[in-house]
Image (cartoon, rainbow, N blue to C red; front, top):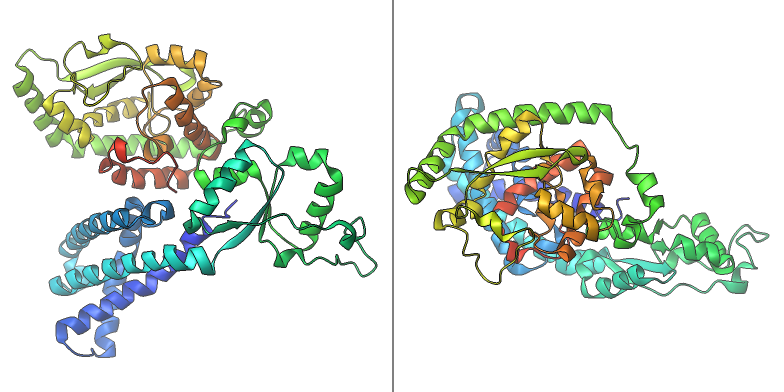
Length: 464
């Protein structure tokens, strides 16, 4: 359900006039006067070509991620990254297609992007501080009580930018005459004026028909959106609730026997084309990394790190990465965790990890079919043996191919304990349940943001 994501769509729709307003301001600032209408239209036709690029960059850096841009420091950082990326992309497109576009307005381009990002950042500040938390605030009531609902209850009051306020359940009782239907076909209580969304614990509603049945039927007749507390949790936080991930009913409904042949064929084709193109484009960079590792470690030092990982349906395969640790680092064993910096990481390896350059050789695994571009992270066989004994249903992440990037990777930090692996599994199961071409594309775009984000800065809550 899209109880939350429709707000991002409204944010996007408001961004479009901001884009053209920024263009108009840039043209006027360049001329220090109003510009002729035909001159403005001429630039609108050319600059509109960049709308898809601009939207893609905004999405990649998290400009539609309300949880992220709610903090001013994150909003400023995202604005700076978006400005640099949009300027580079727009400049490249202008110089590549200037004959077709008919314009090469260097100053207009720079000023438009400058005004766009200033205005877009200011609008997001207003959006999170006033629009979402006041004008678009929705009243939500909970039918039932359990640890998951209580967790949501505690979170919503401290996160007003999500746009929900918790209200008590309206008391119906005799006002509905013991049932919804009255002689005039209406209930005396106007439920729609008291709440906008009803979140229900289905099991508790079934056990308390006197209250649950009456309230549900009234909400249905008054066309109030009804959602289970499990779906509400999933929609807010982008992960599968811990209590439902271990239930056979959830597994049967959302995981087992789930398949889409078109999606599988298209995804494999995209993997082949994407990995082949990636290997060709990064070949000079890989040669530079190869030489740098040789220089740092000596002529006899191994360049690649190879390790046996668990893949699709539990099959073992050898993963390829550039070596970032000293030789023999894996002897420390699985789930090895140290406080502070890991002394096993070489100085060059620290840089390669920070820039994610050590991951490039995995494109060979994707081309071979061992991995996909998007999917759960493949884990070391020694770690999997431990986690499958301590994490319920950990093996379900192996129902699909592992990926170079994935939903858990962009929403949660690297794990080094069983407890963290449990949390990460909930994101992996979200992907298993909701995997689609649109979700894959969104993950790939947001992976670029993740490159610039350190593990220490990763929130425990997902960003969506």
